[in-house]
Image (cartoon, rainbow, N blue to C red; front, side, top):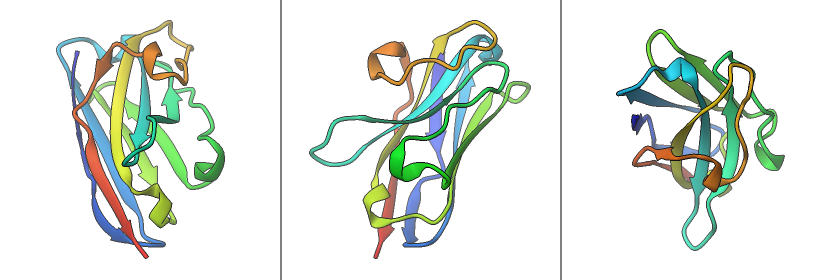
Length: 126
């Protein structure tokens, strides 16, 4: 599976961004997908994940209620809608994939995923 993330950029605090991750090479509907992020000097942090059937996990902590993951298996894409962005959301955002059963939404550890996109930078200014 090859993953290509896009949609990052510079946005002011309170703004929104929609990240996309396009998958090629395999049938996306057989994979759980996840978003992680990594800020400078910090460990890679789990954002949210979604099962092949579309069951998603609630984003962690400060992202809850602001970030939503979705997928379109027919188009081979996964999205991360980010609302009310804060400066602390500044990071490189990565999409990841791993084979999964239909309703399994994957783990929250980076080691749970075998395939990674190259990352897209999100910068939120105050």
